[in-house]
Length: 464
Image (tube, rainbow, N blue to C red; front, side):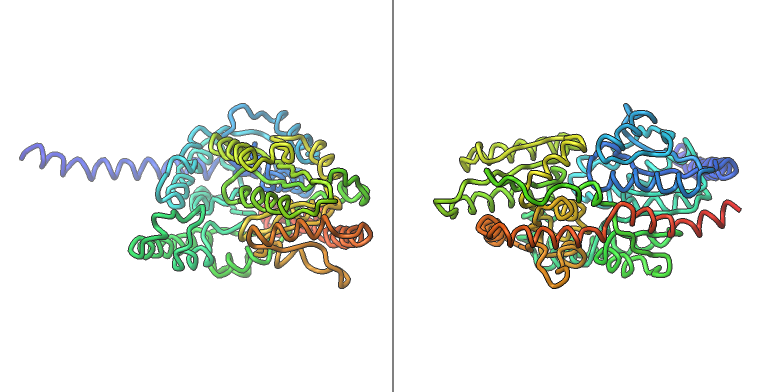
């Protein structure tokens, strides 16, 4: 009894001491903020469109505000200023003004999806709070620039006295996700066990609604929000309710470097390229199945095309998905018709795009779709999913001419593949030319202009 009484007296003291410690740490770091921009990007080796945005954003800030030091928060322990600057050039063709400073993070496991087999969204979100605490205690900048979509870090950055800027590729949760759970649709983010159960589906709807409320609160702490597409802008405005702080900045696409590639290319064999990280939402298996259906229905007098998967692997889970695709290609007897290119350099990617007649993309609700723009700029006719960015912003007619195909299921993708294969050369070149012209709207130069215009007011007001 006495020990219980002692514990009751000690607990408030421990809590008070902890609060005092946290407050003192925060005040210390607020007073010692550095004249810099801290880019929160825990995975600097993911190789996707998000990493291209990171390096282009760094370059924009370096050119716009040369007095500000650029710092990268990364969980990749082998990363150094020199290696990251070299990677920006080798993988994306982006030459930084100078190499950025690197702050290594050692708590990245708390944002790994494998750490949370269930309640993944809330787990990763709360984990990002812990990771941002580590980041800001290690180095506190004037500006906290999130380029990876960790909105739960924004209140933490505000507490440390930072101006919060973010480039949001897609909302962590969307109204579309809620509707799919309500409809009990099984997807990569809605387990079949839950989709089959009315009770579990309703529980997940409640979970999603609570999370979307929390997501709205934390997101509203950003001083400046840049979004990459009309689809993302619509959802973020509804969730965060700060429309006056949200602006659309289309992501950087290497249209100029790709537009010099000749439109005419060898079709023996015709190559169909797929550029995407080997993540579950990219739906690579659908592309493989559609390709198999197209091969099955191919005219006897036409040569068999090749499907080229080009992408990067972030972790062991991605490696397993890549191996599954290889095994499935063998099962479908397509091992001689399918190629796999992992973690290729930028120059190799350009070479592959220059040889492709078509480019395939199959992610549902792809927030934007940089790879789709790259297909179009390089002269490859896009076959993209009929939703979100590709549907609303990219694969639209240009001067009244069709720029590509939109599809939703295996048969529609197979039909689009066959349509391109059977298309007369002059019609194919005309469509490729229209697609290339459309792609020029999403150039890297346009990104630099829009990014600088967006950050200029907030950085100018603070630096003066």
